[in-house]
Image (tube, rainbow, N blue to C red; front, top):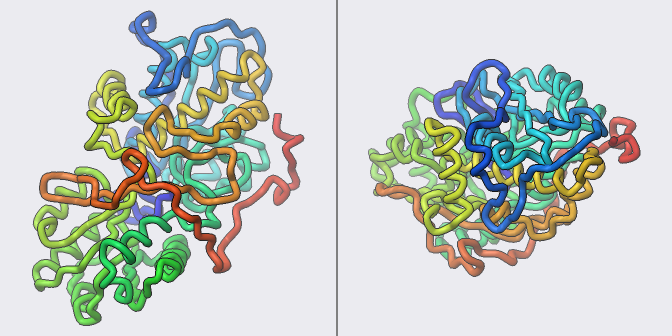
Length: 455
């Protein structure tokens, strides 16, 4: 579930990872019980007693007392003004605390507002106060990973940009050594649009993080039998006139386009493509475009350009009525954060919160970081109660096996004809391991630590 696009909120100037943000301002705390405690249930989807009352007496480690569990939720809220992770923390902790908390301990989530460039400052605060980091993400998260490992802070991130696969991380995104889009590319180039295989282009925002992803995507296309024969970059702060880019795509006869940038820029490019009467076979808008905002921005081009997005095994929101777990998230947002929007990053965050809560609950009174991580790693088919395709959390050595593709239309996002074979997903995809030389995730050993230091 790696977020491939590295430019996020369309109205921000220079975001480096989509969705790693929240709306709010200064740090806030969530998790205060509400009056509906007696009526709340800790069941979610096919999970029972995720949250529950109980009696705890010990304070076994930092951030855990007899009555509370303090966690941090990272976000670029002060920069992006988007609210996925802050809202999800509020919704989950409110619901969980209404159901009794974690064995009676109340969840307290503090927003760690990294404001894009203040990751290390917020990590220092989290290291001093929190038991774990849960359900968040920052665009420049790599800046804080060394500090996080030095203070042995576990994390259950909703999205990861530059530190995928680092130690003490429980993520649904998979091993960064493997291409997260293998199934998607094979479907695009071998089944859906085979005529485009030798005519693939990449346009990417000009910053170091995106450059690495663009190279990996080109390798992934090649592994699927395709050829990237057109590469271009655009300034990360935006482009005033997309005509030269559109003309280049047309003159080179690009048939399939991977766009690595913010979806506001993509919508502007597509407007020009449509105005010069050039239609590609497909455009990979990536899953950061999945939502109503892109549909509004690209409305004039949706009937012409074929926009697709791989959700990496997250159940589509527009089909919430058909999936009890997705509907439950929508209903909980309506109850605890009625003005907030349920987004793809929010669903990912909720699935991570559930994993954290279940693992923490299994530790009972003696809740330590080691117990938390060990319990979470035992999940071999984690679905977040039905929110995502099954993920083997215990397997950190290979890639994730499922994908699902969405198509943008004038009437909304709809599942593409990608031939699902396991409910809403297509699974059992042979993994592809990258052969190129890419940055490796940090380990405890890199900072002079080991699991014996994790308390």
